[in-house]
Image 1 (spheres, one colour):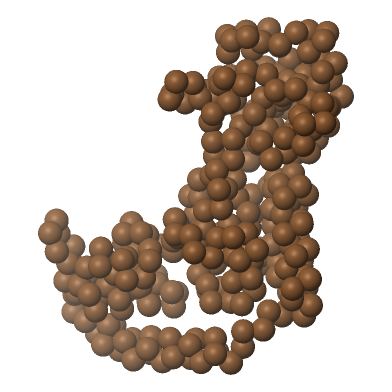
Image 2: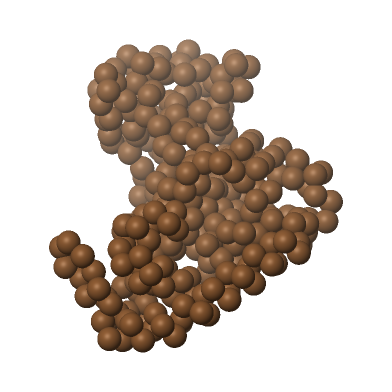
Length: 301
């Protein structure tokens, strides 16, 4: 039995409302509903009568609520006492980040955590492959884009802007596009989608509208660092996140093209398992990224 789901069910039973339970726990209403449905599926019983305006517990639901309420309170008391006993950040923090973000942004922050917490050890995987942090035993992960996994807690760090760039040598030889339609005449290097392995379309924003453009080129890669290296070698145009190219643009190693269309953004999240919510290691990680007070945007189901 999923104890997190049981805890959510008990709160629903106590408040007689998915909405009030979601508010009390800091979760989304849809996440609360999915969690209870999953518990019902695991137990192969119906726990809640649902209609448009209200909910009520079934006979099995009343039994489980009465039997579990004391257990959940004991668990919360144990968690509270453990929090009081140990605020020392120690042990191993296993985290995965996208390769370019990890190298350019996350690593200095992680180095700062190690300096502040000498008893902590980092196990860091920098890869553009999306992993199941619960299944693969990670404490946390950095994710670019919307978080679809409802089994995790996601904290928004910031928005990242997509930028289209090329090497000065490429622009000198081939020129640069003046419109989105002209991209079809240029060698556009792409990164493979994390889910289907296909080349991803390029995204732009102009006059408040998001625009998706299908591009073609002679190279597709599965790693943002490799994509940047290809651009630096003058092979073609690339589209990457702003943090990866701003220093290179400032140094004159890359130039931005189509800047008037570069307003499309993607959110950056730190995600972790609900079971690690009170972990001192996660607290230290949240503080390092400056998001200890930000709102939870994705929750357990």
